[in-house]
Length: 144
Image (cartoon, rainbow, N blue to C red; front, side, top):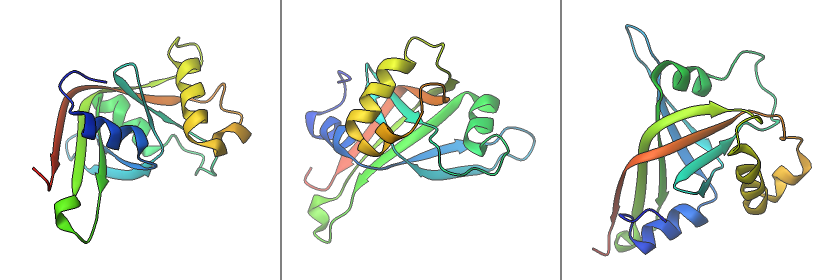
């Protein structure tokens, strides 16, 4: 757990089933790109698998954006009609695509498969993965 992150915020990130990955395109007219993703925190980083869902055949926008800018953000939130229960955690930092040759890939894949049983049926050993090394955590909850 990152030293600056309160226990409740780390629990929200650890236990969340979905987060929202935000990237921005490079170039003269940058455009935001936000998508829901499955992820896992491990060793002060966040890992996102590129799974076997049908893709368009082109390199994914999120990967192109990360290659262009080297940054990304992941938002994890909790909504409740009782607004005192609202909470969110935002991780922003350096991001990269890693492949199976990266030493972080195998343990991250194990952790992703522990959290998401669906990944156990997918051949992800050679699939690319996104890693975000958060350099800044921001959080808020309604109880405070």
